[in-house]
Image (cartoon, rainbow, N blue to C red; front, top):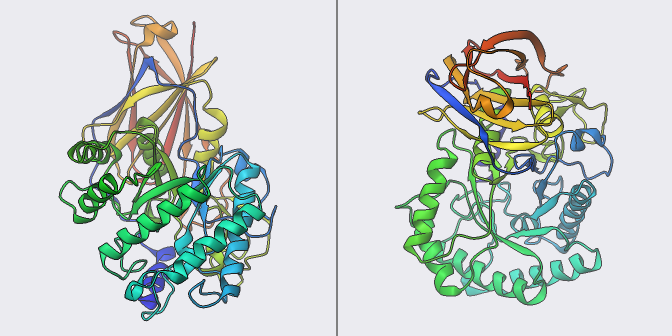
Length: 462
């Protein structure tokens, strides 16, 4: 199992970025419908933070509006986790503690992965034990007790989220019956509520989104309703290269209604985007999807071992990245192509978020804000070429009459052939003249490169 999982990651840096079917139609921005101030909901990542404080300069966190970190010492060199030794646990705990402190330094919340502290990180051997084997929970109970003691001693509780088990629906991480995982959920939930009641609990943390007929989703929801162990944060992952938030949320609400569970708590897609989607176009697609549903999101991480704890999940790089010269402790960081999308999102898009809708196929997206001086729009496809557009509606609310011309600044966020290459930022495509018609403005996109994203800006008059 370990070999299968690790080999699947080792091929990702050279994965061909296949493009999807052509994108058509229009995404829509509604200038007259504000939905709250920007919160940078998509600016989080799993791992990606070096264990040495300050190794990656501050600006790479602050410019993107960093909100959420997640970790637990997975694949830390020369460790296997609690199931092998207390020393392994201590090394992984110190890694998680360092990542927690870095996250809190920038005002973010941190999601702890106790499954990684245990050692279920995809690198464990096929005969590795799991909590509750042979109905023996003593080792898991000892781990939770030890972690609670250590977390209290190191002031690790504020802003902490406890992700009871990562991706239990995948055999890479939980190679046991579903019923055994549900027992783990219940007993861990009870201890946390009793001993650290202010720590938020996250779950189910499945590898895929809500499935109306899925056994894992249905059995879990029925169980937590009956067991009175509903999580504070609902979490799942979007790392299959398909699916969308609108459909997932609709299905999720239908499932909650089926089991009479009130819709409450935070939605956190605490891993999103496959390796091929970590490009400017798909970055905008995910940002737009998450913001529309007011869901937090953390970028997936497709590196292994020491490099798993580096690069901010692909937003930055450094000399030697992706080569035999790589060092987990070296510095000299620079931005990748995708970083500049998140920098624009986190630093430039201030004011009020605007309601948006995707195109009909949900493969063309827009995220928009109304600032004090300008309207700013990010637009991107899900790795697709085609002729599509962003329609801006409600021009009268920002001072434009029908037939009036407006200057639109256009920026292009280009991708690199090598994910680890340095990028200098968005390219100025100049000023485009556009005309308002009956309160609407069409911003046409002739997308020849499936990996490219765009920004549009125009002044407001009122």
